[in-house]
Amino acid sequence: MTGTAVRVERLRVVRGGRLVLPELDCEVAAGRVTGLLGPSGSGKSTLLRAIVGVQRIAGGRVTVLGEPAGAKTLRARAGYMTQAPSVYRDLTVRENLRFFARVLGAGPQAVARAIDDVSLGDHADQVVSRLSGGEEARVSLAATLLGRPELLVLDEPTVGLDPLLRRDLWGLFHALAARGATLLVSSHVMDEADRCDDLLLLRQGRLLAHATPEELRGRTGRDRLDDAFLALIESGA
Amino acid sequence: MRTSAVTARVLSQLRRDPRTIVLILAVPCVLEWLLQELFRGGPVFQRAGPPLLGLFPFVTMFLVTSITMLRERTSGTLERLMTMPLAKLDLLAGYGIAFGLVAAVQATIVSLVSFGLLDLHVAGPRAVVVVLAVANAVLGSALGLFVSAFAETEFQAVQFMPAFVLPQILLCGLFIGRDAMATWLRWISDALPLTYAYDALARTAADSFSTRFAADVAVVAASTLLALALGAATLRRRTP
Image (cartoon, rainbow over all chains, first blue to last red; front, side, top):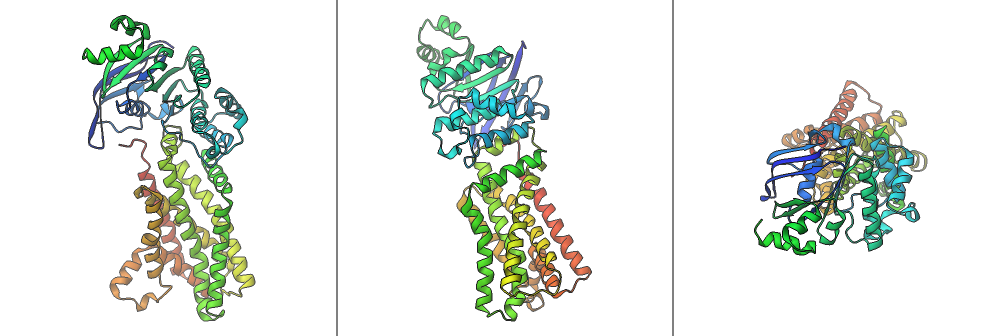
C-alpha cells in the first residue's frame, strides 16, 4: 500500500478544559513505521486516541485508511494499543488473547502467532497480574497484533522493556510494515527515533517537524536526534 | 458468537476468584439459616424467607456487575473493546448472560438449602421462585451496569449498594405492607422495580397468581430493558 494512511487536518482537542491540540495538521505514510515523538504531555496520546476514534474532538478532521476516524468499518482494520496495558489482569495471557481473538473474529492460530510475536511463549499460561510491567505491556501489544490490522497505532509500546526485547519489537514492527502494514508508534525516548522510517515531532500540541531521521539531521546539522530536537525547539520552528 | 465470547470471558474471570464464588454461593444460605434460627422457623421466617431468596441474587449481581464494569472502564479494556468490532449489545448481553447463569446456580443452591434443610415452605411452585430469582439477578446486573458509569472508584461503586438497593428493599413491602405506608412512601415504592420483584415472589409464596403477578413480571422485565438501554447509553466509543 502506498500513499497516505492517516490524514489529520486542523485537529482541535480540548481535554478537561485544557487545549491539548490547538490545530494540528499531519500525515502518516502508508506502509512505513512512523514514530510520534515528543515529551510527556505534548499531546501524543490524545492524537493517537483521535486517530483510532475514541477521542471526542472539538474540530477538524481525521481520515484513516480513506474513512473518517472511528468509522465502524475501521474497527477490524486498525489496531490500537493504549499506553497503560489494557488487558484483564485476572486472566492468563492465553485467555486474554483468546477472548480478543474471538471479538476480532481471528482464529486460534492468531493467538499462538501473537504470543510468539511478543516472545511470551514461556508465560502463556500465567495470570497477567503475576507478570512484570514489561511483560504485561507485551500482552497488551499482542492483543493489538491479533487481527493483523492494516494500521497499528501503538502508544509507547516499548517503554520499560530491556534493550534486547526492544530491538526485537522494532524488528517486528518493520517486518509488519514490510508486509504492508502501517505503524504509528509513540515514544518519549529519542533514542528510539532512529528506528523509525518517519518522525513526527510533537511539542505542546504542535507539530515541530515531519521528517526522516536523516532529513532531521541534515536540517539541524546535529548528529544526535536528541540535539536535533532541541535545536528545532530553540529555533522556534 | 461475540456475545458468547464476552460471557465466557466474564465466567473465566470469576473462576479465577474462588473466594468470591464461595461468598456468592454461601452467604445467602447462611443468611437464610440465620433468619430461620432468629425466628425459630416461625411465620416471620416463612413470610420473609421466599422473597429474600429471590432478592439475594439481585443484590449480589448488582454489586458484582457494577464493580466488574467499573474495572472494565478504568483498566482501559473497555476503550480497547470500543475500538474493536464489538457491538455494545454484545457486551451487555454477554454480561447479562454470564451473571444470569451465576444467579441461576446461586438461586438453585439457596433454594435447595432453604426448602430442603431449613423447612421453608411456599404454596406456589418452587421453580417459579428460582426463575424469579434469576430474573431479579439480571435486573440487578442491568442496574449495576448503569450505575457503574457514575462511579470513579471501587469505593464509590460499593456505596451505590446502600444508596440504590437498600431503599428499594425497605420500601418494597417486605418490612411493612405497602397498604400501611404513608401515601408519599407508597408513591416512591410504586416507582421502584424491586417492589414488583418482591410482589411477584410474595404471590408465588402464597400461590396467589393473578393478572397482578403477570404485571409484576412485566414491570421487572421492562425495568431490566430500560436499565440496559441506559447502561448502553453510558458506553461511549468516544470519550472526552
